[in-house]
Length: 120
Image 1 (cartoon, one colour):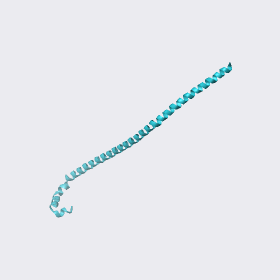
Image 2 (tube, helix red, strand yellow):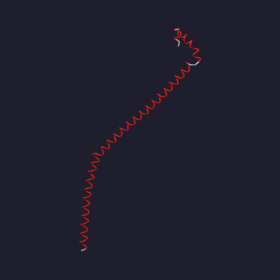
Image 3 (cartoon, one colour):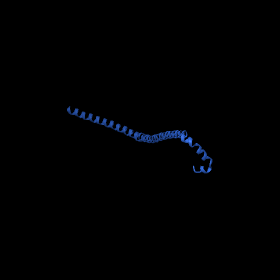
Image 4 (cartoon, helix red, strand yellow):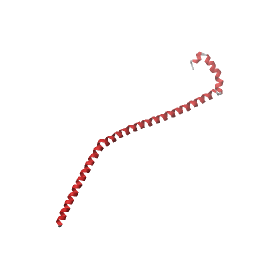
């Protein structure tokens, strides 16, 4: 009787092992299917997305570079406007000065003689 129980227990163990083999085989089949999915769709999709990301990143860097250049140009324009305003103020101050007014007749006289005009 004890042997029958042990024999039956061995059969139960074999049945459990066979059942586990079936479960494992099904898991391997699902895993293989998933690997095909990953290799067939997911890997190329990731590669395309990375390429798109790299392209967009390069475009962003170019735009940022253009923005920096535009700010530099705007700064240069601002500096040139300030320089022009300063030069105009200096010119106005010179023309309002006493020496400019005192030398006006001399400049007028030189303008009448073409021989002197060539030396200016």
